[in-house]
Length: 516
Image 1 (tube, rainbow, N blue to C red):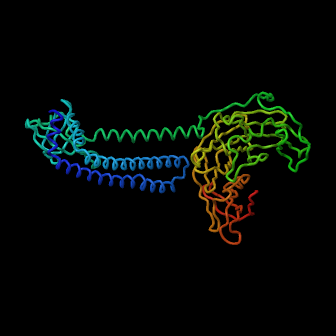
Image 2: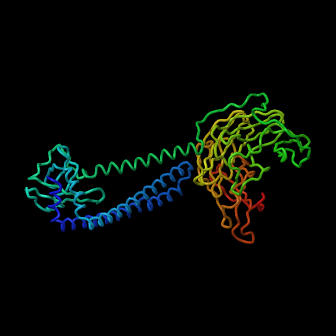
Image 3: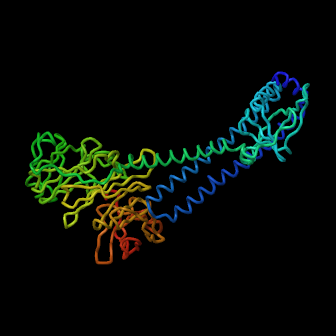
C-alpha cells in the first residue's frame, strides 16, 4: 500500500494512537525508574557492600588489587546504567513534545517502519512480522493489538506493542491484508524474538567492557609496575670500569676528618661523591652523579629528601663491600659495588624497566645472598607496585623474584632472610614467607592509648630482627592519643612469635622527634 495513502487513513485514528502512545510511555518511564533503582542497588549498593565486606577479609595484596578493579568496574556499569536511564527519560520527553507538535510527522516515521514488514504470520497468541519471506523478527501479542481503521481496499491497520527487555515496550504499526498465514513450525515462536538483538548488544557492551578493564588492568600492572619476566642479569667484567661507563674524578678529594668511620660525602662545588672507611683519613672517589642516586621521585611520605642526604639502605660504605643503587636514565636500574675500598668498581644491571621509582632499598645476608626492592608510584592513585629482586653472589647478578601491589605508599621493607620479609605502610603491615610470591596482612595489636597513621608504622633503620628461634622484634612508631604525651610520637617495641603473622605491644621506648 502507498505510504501517503496510509498516513491519510491514520489521521482519522489520532485519538486511540495518542492514548496508546501515552500509556506506553508511562509504562516505559515506570520501568526505567525501577531499572534505575535496581541498577543503583545492584552496582552501587550491593557492589559497595560486597567490596567493603570482602575488603576486610582479603589479606592478600594481589587479591585486593583485583577486588578494587572489579569494584570500580561495577561502579562504571552502574554509571552507564544511570546515564542510559537519564537519556531514555530525555528521549521520551522529546518524543512527547514532537508528537504534540506534529502528529503527521510522527505517523510518517511509524508508517515507514511498518513498511519494512510486509509479511505477517500468526499463531494463537501473537502476530509475527517478517521482512519479505524471511523469518519473523518481531512478535506482537494479540491481546495488546488494537484495530485502528480499514483502508479503502479492505486492508486493516493495527497498532501493537512490541515488548522489549526488562518491561520496556514500543508501539508498532502493521497492516493485515486478509487472514495471516500460520507461523511455520520451523520459525521461532519464543517471546524473546524481539529481544535477541538488544540482548546481543548488551552482552557485547558488558563483555567488551570486561575485556577492556581486564586488558587495562593487566597492562597497567605490567607496565606501571614493571612486571617483567624473571631473568638473571650478569654484572660487568672484573676489570675496573672505564670513564665511558661511569664518571672520572675531576676535583680533589676531601681532606676533612669525620665522626663516623664509614661515610659518604658530597663535594658541593664539584658535585662529586667520595667515601671514607677510616673516619676521613683517606677518601675514594665514587664514579656516580648525585642525581643518579636520586633517580625517580626522591620522596618519603614526610617530604623530599634534601640534596646531600640519601634514603637509608640505598647505599652502604665499608672496606670489604661498598655499594650503591642508581639509574642514569630513569629507566635502567643498576647496582654499583666495590670490594677493595673504592679502588675499583663493578656494576650489575638490576632492571631494564624501572620507571617512576620512589622507595628503593637493598639488604644483604651473611651467606652473600641479598634482596633489592623498589616501588613504582602510580600517577593516578596512591597504590604502588613493589618489585623484588634477589642475588646469591653479593650483587654480581640479580634476578627478579616477584612483584606485588601495595594500596598505600610504602614506608619500609625489611627482610629477616631471603624468604621472610615485611612491607609497611602508614597504617598496615604485610608479610611474606615465600620470597614475595604472596603477601598477607599482619595483625598488629594497637593499645587503646595509641594510633597508627603518624610518622611511620616502622621506619628504617628500625628493621625486623630475629632475636631467638621463635621470636621477632621491631619498633613501630605510634602516636599517643591520651595523657600528658597526647599528640607525641613514640617508638614502641613489638614482638612476634609466629613469624610475623601477629604482633604484640611490649613496651613504649623513646619519643620520636621529627628529625629522627
